[in-house]
Image 1 (cartoon, rainbow, N blue to C red):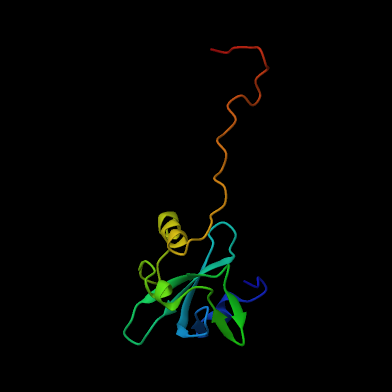
Image 2: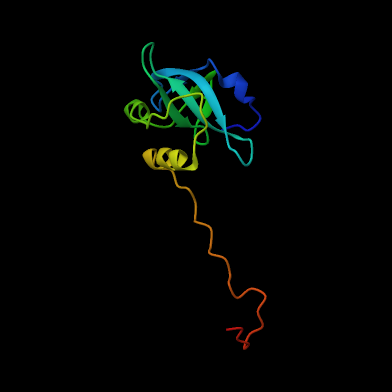
Length: 123
């Protein structure tokens, strides 16, 4: 998503699926804890419906609305964590898996030999 957009400006915008079908209205925007970059949006899917979390990274602002590159049904079936609360790393992981998004390669394990001279044994 465009990084120069103020996350507060997303609230209240209409959200559409990949085909342009209205999904709902952006209710809240969630920032990444480490970077402060907008990462997720909670989209109110109906008057008496719950909010569905959608990823902002593959989404884009088009004609004043948020275009989410997924099917409406998949968006509506996203895990429900309630709004107004912090998303835990586990909840974010569930959302990434739900949308089939690649999280990137896992962090490599620490190099236990770093700083040791080859051929010496401290054990």
